[in-house]
Amino acid sequence: MKSNLKPPSFFKIMFNGFTETMRIPPAFMENFEGGVPLIFKLICADSRNSWFVATEGKEEGCFFGSGWSKFAVEQNLELKDFLVFKLVGNSTFEVEIYGRTACKKNTTLAAKRHDDGVHSPAERAREVKPIKQHTAKRKKPKGAGRMASAAVKRARKLPKKVEMDAEPKESSFQLVLKRYHKSYINIPRKIARETGLRCKTKTVIKNSEGITWGVDISVWKSGQTCLSTGWSDFWAANGLAVGTTILLQFSGGSGNEIDVQILNRGEPGDSSSVQLVLKDYQRYNIFLPSRFAQKTGLRWKTMAAIKDPKGKAWDVRISTLVVKETHQTFLSTGWSDFWAANGLEAGTTILLQFIGGSGNEIDVQILKRGDGNIGAGGRHLKTN
Image (cartoon, rainbow, N blue to C red):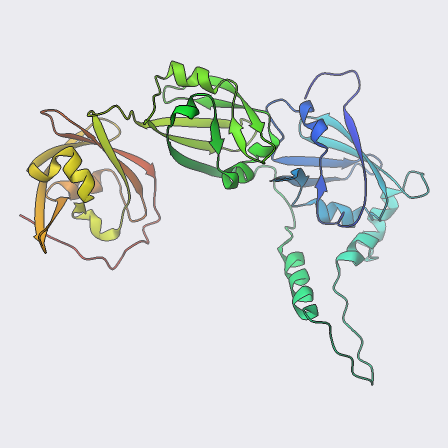
């Protein structure tokens, strides 16, 4: 939070739909250093009771999501109520509530009424009321049953409490760099929403050596989120080039950090790589895509050395089957030893990167650990 004499604040008037979400004014975003926190603490100015509310990034901006409905109900919020939010900490708002009379509401009384079982207007607005049966039958409007069912489901999905120490989700995506990526990197919309990057203005990117760079986050009019100012410095310092394959991994929380791994430098003739999601039967042998086997020359070799992320190497036999005049190349004897030593399992995502030259070396990177439940019924192929 920026250091000011008075805490920054904004106000909101409760209109239709106020019980579900509430938008944070876009102009208020500049008060956060490093971006908007994933979770806010709302403290009632009168009662000093507190609620935890999660933020959600949408096309229209940043909103209070999970936990907001609970706050609205327990504070007895009504249509056209006037709320003032004062930022008293980087992730804490003090909230004052004024009614339609322009006078401050007694939130302590509202909390007591809720504890006593008296429903607030906000709570009544979210209830699904049964239709009384009359002697004269009336037809229900089309879709009424579906709407009521959907409303009940939404109510059931509302979390009882948003934990401050909840473990943040990690998201990642892989990208082969193009020429225009030298100036900016587009973030997939789904990841921008999941990580909350749409609501942030700055982030920190870190290379494999732990060196960090500050990078601005920009949102275009189309709604596209991208890494902008500062990214070109990272590009130059790490020797990136067109054709290089990188993995961007986003870690949530206050750190707001993005780890960037260089998977393949993409320099012509030096290396080729392929990403695979392992099946259970691949613990004994692993088939290589035909294009990869031909491009690297592995189709015509008999042995290779595979190296794990720590640099330890295993000798592995390369075998070839001919099925209907099609050559199928696979790693056989020695692969199962590598599998066991590195704790591989079904569902694990690996990157095989072939390094040319007399060594015939294949570097194996473990991108994501699996759950052991994929392809349990796969076939096993034994070779000599």
